[in-house]
Structure formats: C-alpha cells, structure tokens
Length: 62
Image 1 (cartoon, rainbow, N blue to C red):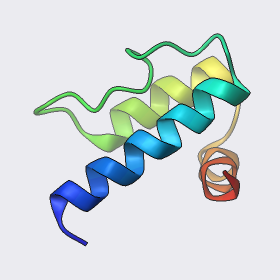
Image 2 (image 1 turned 60 degrees about the horizontal axis):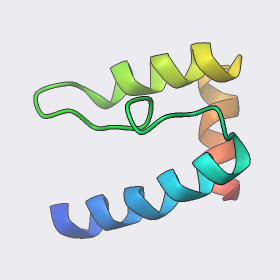
Image 3 (image 1 turned 45 degrees about the vertical axis):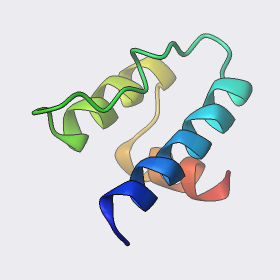
C-alpha cells in the first residue's frame, strides 16, 4: 500500500469514527506531519476511554 492509499483509507475510517463518536473533532483524528501515529492513538485512547487493543479493534470493525 502506498502513502496515498493509506491516507485515503484513513480519511474513510476518520469519517466513520466521527459518525460513531460525534464529539471527536478533526484535530483529534488528524495525522500531523512529523508526529507519530502513537501520539494520535494516545489522544484517542484518552478521549474514548479505550485501551490500545480496544481502539484497534474498534477501527478494524468500522
């Protein structure tokens, strides 16, 4: 999977997460240049009250 496919896939998943959890903002779900995926996942874990594994499962189920 190239970078463009990965970004497109994330945009789709991001939309589904926002539908399921209306309180999430674009900033909560943004991959910022130079920041790691783990940092964003950590923010989501706190905001949703989920473990890392629960968050992965949630995203995979979308």
